[in-house]
Amino acid sequence: MLSCEFLRVYSPSAEVRGHGPGQETLQIHKENVGIENIEPIGQYAIKLIFSDGHNTGIYSWDYLYELAATYDVLWEEYLRKLSIAGIQRTKTDVE
Image (tube, rainbow, N blue to C red; front, side, top):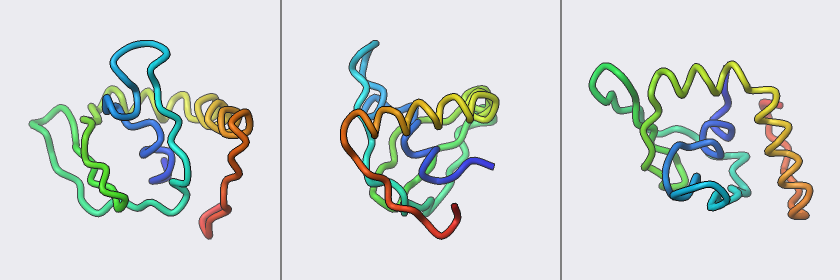
């Protein structure tokens, strides 16, 4: 199970990932973001529409599998980046 926050901060969009290595944008204050809609993209992917207005990025089934398979590493990496940036996460009801 992948949280909305996790899916949002690891969006495959250029807004989040940038256009190349080192151009990533740290996503902050996404603890309470939700998914408002899911749109199929052919038979290979979905587009997630988030409650914060983010609606770019195509989540292929392969990318979703990769996120699930590496969840622990990616989540710890995200928390480390927040810590380095001096950003405190707000706990949510689902944690």
